[in-house]
Length: 598
Ligand code: NDP
Image 1 (cartoon, rainbow, N blue to C red):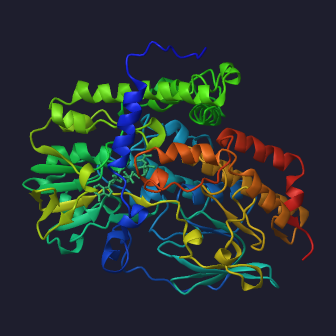
Image 2 (cartoon, rainbow, N blue to C red):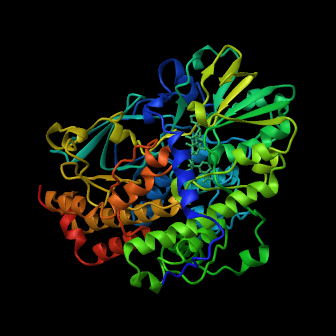
């Protein structure tokens, strides 16, 4: 018998049919090509509002041990772990004007990390810092990123406001030549790529978008010059303004309460509603902070990852809506009972638990939103993991304000048209003074993979040419033919929602490899073609299952707008991936990537 009561207070068939219908009415034939790149006439959407426009420096033609590309949390962690491993000469090259990555760019009102700060902010133990809130505001994370840069002496040799334009391997010298848009041609023994997977804003390709005469910007480049106020709100510039916000993802959830409070009129243009669970943010208890013993953060991070990655973990140290949902959804599969279920029984049991979770989410909308029609529109009809879950104790409440209107665009493929002064959906025009795009980012598009950053390895072979029959890595970190090039990110390995933790494990791993190469006097680090082939074969064990799951979801970036790619990830999840890496390091794996003679 299934460990889920069949005495249900809902009809699974009805829900299945509803989910399917909600998905079908949102699928667009143009899929992911519906978006516009922020280039050319739209390039200003990606400009850096925080950097010094007059900054200049002399080009560099020197040599360092490691060039780290990207000064976000991944680059900082790589720098920190390499420093701890004894590497003296590290240069971080970063497009923005300071460290922080996503937290450097995103400064919109209400910005917080929706993962608990005690497990998200990196290196808390090392820096002796305990965040002020359970969920940190963006400003605290940016400050912490700078503190990591100071602590590990990464500012000394950093190059900000600099974009790498080419990587070229010089075989004779066993060095990379790193060219940049500031005329640099530096040489490095190692290059660590950590240039982000969601750093490029995207715009919807709405007809007429270029004809709008009012003010516009993307949430990741918030224009406080126009809105007034700061990340804490108080957007005084919006008094008397009619504002349109397009998008209702994790960013919009945090922005909407502030816009609702301060704009004269706010129109929220929604295509698919998010799940909005409770937040319950609170200041850190000083007594608890004082009681923490060394090693506390690692233990908490592992505990959180174990729970959200579907492991069987008894204790829940974080105890929030993330872990609560994960525990609920995994009640069956993580326990011993799972072994006695057939795959079909397991899938059915998981689906029932998912329906229950989503019924709770929908009931919460009814409890909070007073207008019945608006409440119906705000209810998400899809499985919990179809879209990034969100958390807020203010978002849904904002729709009870008389100056806030939810505009449903689901049957129109989104906002249909923009005119000189309005947005058009169906037969209605909404006149506004300002359009704010909360429309997200181009995803999983490291510049190396898109080809925007050309990488030439041994014999001048372009990385994408080498990968013409599919990506080739060992554990996602390095590729044959591209010695001493180490990559962090969510590619051909295992990711999870606490991405900072994932990056930390990756950074620690590559630092261990670099340190070992130094110890052994290796000429360079490079996996054998055989080990790369073996890794490709080991990936994708559950690709079919994931593919089917995502095919049934409403479109979004999780499923490539309704046309899911076969996924290439580590099927057993992040905790198992980290254990596998430890085992690889301890039991001879290093022998495979150390090339001693050239
Ligand atoms: P998303 O890609 O999640 O959301 C984009 C939104 O724009 C969606 O609601 C989408 O609707 C909507 N949209 C796109 N085109 C149109 C159109 N033509 N008309 C109407 N609506 C449209 O971007 P976000 O910036 O919200 O979030 C991106 C990611 O960043 C998150 O998923 C999360 O990983 C991360 N993030 C993390 C936070 C944290 O605290 N850790 C906070 C904020 C973001 P539809 O769904 O129908 O496509």
